[in-house]
Every structure is written in C-alpha cells, then in structure tokens.
Length: 190
Image (cartoon, rainbow, N blue to C red; front, side, top):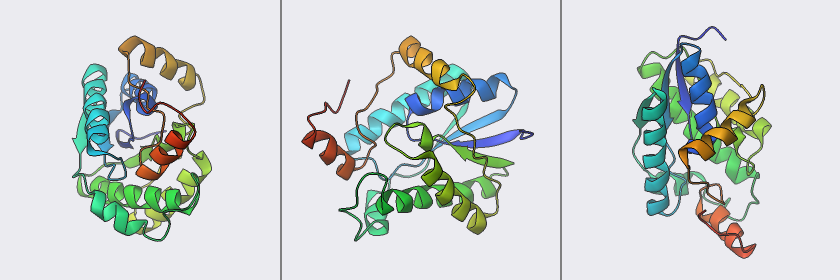
C-alpha cells in the first residue's frame, strides 16, 4: 500500500470497522471522513454518525465530520429519484461524496483516500470505484480501490460488529432506499 496518512470515507461503522482496525494495526495514520448528506432522516444520520465516531475512538482513528447537507444532495440527484438501487442515482451520490472527500484530502495533505462504500450488500463495489476514478481525475489525490471485504476482512468485520454491538441498518441511507426497504417489509433498525 505505501500510504502513511490515509483518509477513509465511510458511510457507517459496520462497513468501516474492519478497515480501520487493519489500517491502524498496520501503522497507518487513519482519519475517517463522515460526509453523508444522503442519509435520511436526520435522526438516522445522527445515529450512524455517533456510532462511527465511537468506533473511531475505540480503534484509534481520527474522526472527521463534514456538514450534513441533504438539500445539496437532493439537488445533485434531481431527476434520478426513480432510479433503482445501484442505478444512476447511486453513481451521482458516490461521485458527489467522493469529490468532496478529494477536496478534504487535498486541503489536509493526505497521501491518498479510500472508501468503504462498496462493503455494503446494498452497493456495487465496481460502481463505487468508477465514481471514485472520476473524483480522482477532478481532485488529484490517489484513490486506493481496496476491496475491504477480502483478505479476511469480512470475517473481521462480522466479529467486530458482534463485539461492539453495532447497529446494522437495513437500507443504504437515502429516503429512496428506505422506501424500498419498507416496501419489502424489512425493519429499518436492528
């Protein structure tokens, strides 16, 4: 890998816990960036944010929160509201968040950034990486397209979720994925 100072863009603690633990154990200076204007409703956003901050404290990583900007997110995905999960709306959402992460990484002198967006069963790892490449072209900081489910990390993630008693949401985060989860009769909290 070769990065000493890495920005990890995260959607939630369950997706990021194994990556954080492994990176910290490897001696990497890790900051976890929480920029998720897509999460709905605000109470859900706050729950995920607070749990992410808690996991960062437990594992020895820095936690950074950027402003919660749901109106900006709504403007970015306008016209894509009816897209299916993993469709164009998700690509725009990833790009918006990763582009903002690029700006933060550049301003704060990170060597590179990565994300755990592709860890979720609701998302497509390759779709995340395509959005990240576009953000990298615009932002200039290297993006490490690591699959944080491989090399024993999925097993570690499950163990940490259990050990820390982490909240596991049943939808990606936006109101459109929540609506789909409700249609399918899934609970929105566990």
